[in-house]
Image 1 (tube, rainbow, N blue to C red):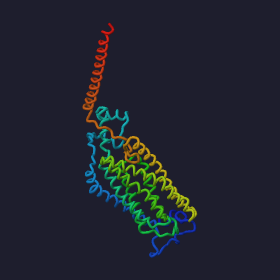
Image 2: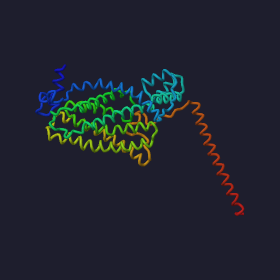
Image 3: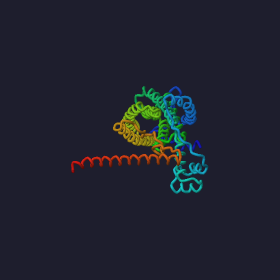
Image 4: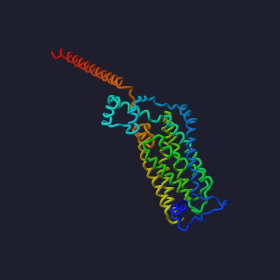
Length: 394
């Protein structure tokens, strides 16, 4: 198995520039450390460690913090226990068609309206609460903030990205920065089924996988310095977005709007100017001054271009939000990633068929009475005006 992997995966022409072999990058202990693929094995147990730390963090720190900041959850009506509807809900569809509703009416002996109401309550029951979304945002905020600070510190003494490439030893700070970042993104992929599904769920999954491949390949090919800059650019705006979400769930509208404006500026500058102008230009153009193109050159830049395409997509959503903020005066929704993927707005709760019908009937009667009163008043006014004109006419 090892021989097969070495023959097909670890070929020198895939990972190293022409003229450089695996023997050329062997280093002694006193010379430093060269990044090896086996180092990434530690990221998988680290991902499970992140999940465990997150579980403790959300319950010990995030939940009490949400209560302190005033996060409130909606009181939702629980759907009645109907086994046949529950089975259909989990195995078939959460939003049945009219034909399926008619079939369920015959099976359960309930009216069509009661079945539709049951599915509405059941969908609302599964929606994540504000506390859950706050905990998720606070966990990401803490990690992105710590990661951004660490990445900023690790790049202070870096003068050139491709000096002596690929024979440059990796610094201890860059090594741990890579291992922690990849472990964190692996934990996000492992938790994707339980986390809140956003409007850009598919784009987020693509982003996570592209990031994992980018981190892993850049580490094995010793693109460590430029890879550190890539992760730093992403973390610089992500912690601002997560902090804005936290205050949004807490109802701090002004603070949320201010943080969103700062996030928008940082995102647009770093993702649309710094990332293509500094990172992609360096890896795509400047790197050719140090070594000829090879497979790793094309693969690494292809992953960077995938990330840039996602940046443009998110920038479009953010500019829509900025437009709403400027012309409407507030941020109504997080167009980038703060909506559930299934429906845009939460469906209204109803107490039941009879009570809702009585409420609607009362509202209709009140409107009809108001309309009748207006008609009577208008007729009396017109009659009074006519009577006042009769003497003059006579």
